[in-house]
Amino acid sequence: MWEQNSQFRLRKTIHRRKPATGLALRLTPVVMLIALVTVLATVGIVYTLKYANTVSVTFAYQRATEREDGTPLPLEEIKYTRLFCDGQQVGEEPGADGEITVRLEKGSHTCFLIHVDTTGLQSARGNAVKRHVEAGAG
Image (cartoon, rainbow, N blue to C red; front, side, top):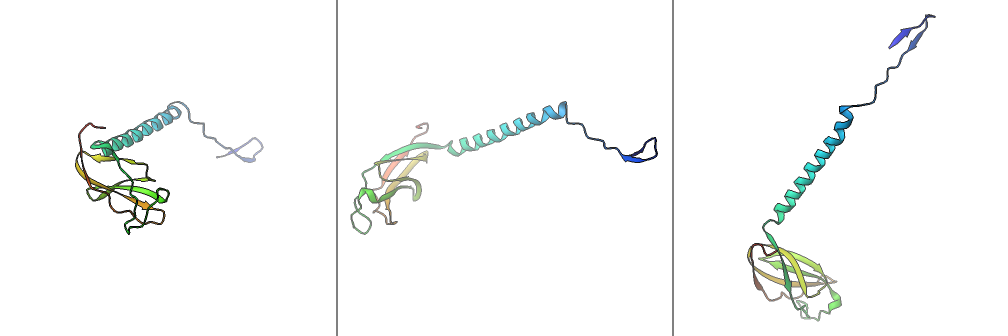
């Protein structure tokens, strides 16, 4: 806005906005907190629903000593142990320490293991085992 002073010169008057005070300043952190709590609650619900029908199950095994082609498979060459249940891979762990833990849905499952070596070759499929998972087992 322009205003005229006593000597008839024009000068520009700058009106500055006052900083936010009162409710506007206090409301912003409250709104942010509510938004954060809502997001965290949603993530928690999704995580809980994802695992609501699953149970942690540990399989103990003896490692394979041969690859699929019959060549020896030394322990130090095993890169991964993979567990398959009902035709789908459900777990993978590095090395071959004698057990693997996965989450399975409640019910009966037919499972088997394979080892993968450092070059990508696999061991023969392990013997299939049937595992029944009960509700509330973990």
